[in-house]
Length: 289
Image (cartoon, rainbow, N blue to C red; front, side, top):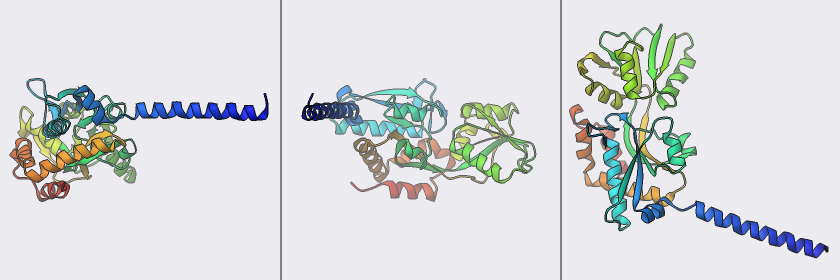
């Protein structure tokens, strides 16, 4: 084989491989909106015990603040795509599985109580902010949290709450505090009810929901201070700009219309009107079209 024929063969091989790679990338890069339009369905992830954001209701169906927001988003996307009856597939996810479910396409949107962080943005994308809360502690009446010696704090592994607690304890090695891992919020409440832990650490509004839905809410005490900042958002696949825009457009419209206050009242009405921080968030995130 001559040198020129070798070059020609290599060039053809290079072009063919490039063409194959291009075809593969195009097939694998089909956007979420295209898939929704083709299948006439959307997959929404929900948590099973993140009261009042995302949980299972008495009828076995997902309910909560984030569920209502995702339902609104699904309705708007279906209307904008011209789908008269968009099918919604609800998929249960956990703290451990939620990000993988978004990345691998098992779900299109996660409707839970996930904090938007920069480290998570390296793997997934987030919608506009949907809620703002902070980490706190729930305990039983009569439990003293002032003395850290021997304190047992239940927490879900892999959460921002756990990370903040670990960082704080590393800065105070003398504090004899033990973190007790639990699988979900329901197990966290059970841990303090059964005295397996002295307190359960999570986001304040989730702790309020856990206390209010207990058989005897008066048994519980909520710490009056936050130890972290937790901006919630809906989680979606990273880099899908068109889908993220559709989600954000729906949320912004909902915020601007004032209908969000009805949803807030449905799930947090027992606590009174939304505080100034939540009102400001709705105003700031209610972006114009």
